[in-house]
Image 1 (cartoon, rainbow, N blue to C red):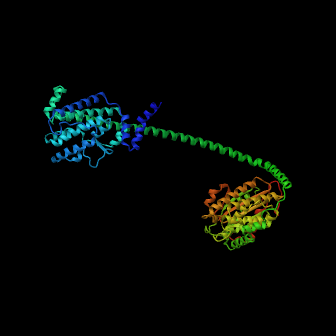
Image 2: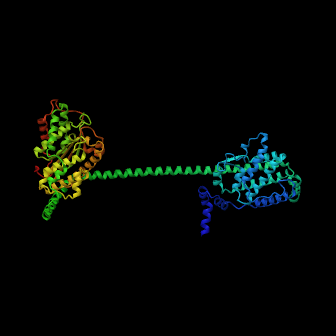
Image 3: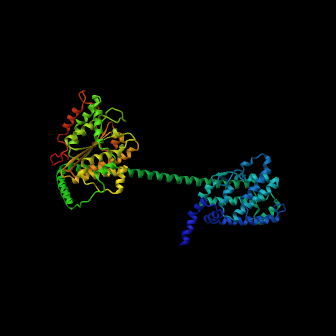
Length: 611
């Protein structure tokens, strides 16, 4: 099992990985040898024959430097380059440029480009074959540098090897396993051995003829020797180069086929994705349709559910009041008010200044407050017995950063009228009165502290304060928006639990745009989410509590459009309204009183004033 698994991996996969990552040339060479096909019978026979020929020739010749020449087992391309450069240096007197020759080594390395001979060596098994061809070429070039009469012949015959191939390192890695390329390499190898044998005749023709007479028939060498050598080398070198280019084109074709397949897969994915989007749209439409049907069903059945809920709630409260064990709260109302650090007269002062500011306005600006009071949408929202939030965008025409607006005038008069008529408990926060950074009540934290303080002033003595541990009290004192919002919710719910009759609470927050600026925005978002949850909780106990939250913007707010549904936003028209005579406090109070008639009556109950 190990042999059938490991060997194919080394041959087919590990070689390319190691070639890219390893600097161990011995290991890379060993892997290449494992991947290489076995030498053909022709190359083995030709190598043995050449080795025998060269050995016999060196014994027969009398030429110095050739006699007794032995092929060295370690001979490599560097030895060939050294001998070729020496021959080229002697040949330079003809004016040929050495830079065009395939064995010139200046500013060139095999990973960039190489000659046909260098590529050939990469396709031969290391050892006897590479040593054989390198030793033979080294012998020829060594003789060429010594003998002027054969120098030109040698260099001219081997001119077919001068062409270089770009990117040879990548070609070797990519096409190493191509069997036809191996065959072309073997044919070029044999042609070079033939050429070397023929060129040896120029060293010592007598010795060469004696060897040829012993090994071959003389008619094999009837052609002109130089023409034969040149043609054989050029033909095989050209075939070798052409097959390299063929391998490259074939790989490009495979890449092109792969790209086409990827394009088709992407198109199939796009079409499938489009079908999924259509399915999602259909599912969403069906879901919305079912939701709309549920909404249509709710008003018809809500009254019955509310009556049942009120009865269950009252029974639960009675049972809890019987079972409850009296326990002293950890903190009193007065102590909690001290932690909030809100002056006792804050609400009265803010409302009084809001009315004074409104009375000093131009009649056209005063009319904007009357427009809201007379708006049908506002009156419907206010008179409904449902807990809800309404966002008003006044389009008042004053400066965006102004601390007071016509809606501030509305806040002062409307809250005052609510308090006088005892229709509902007004909780107010006028942002313009606390908009400076050094104000202790600025921002959403200040808003919640003011609202809690007013709530405690209205219900504190009759309400059991919720359980508050030390950490809760310290966080409240520090003005942590999370604990302030939770405290406001707990006091509202505690007031409902301790009350024996239904009541209504109206929260009016003026100047919302002043709370959205800079670092204040994150705290405001938390407070708004908390108020929305509280409104939902109040809706769960209908008949006992009506909670209205009115958020007033003097201008159109992008934040309001992002945070609230369109059904909860009322944008006043551009028409100023009014008769041009202005709206003093008495006139606006009369309009407010008219708007409050029949308002905030819990369904199934008679109007009950707060106590």
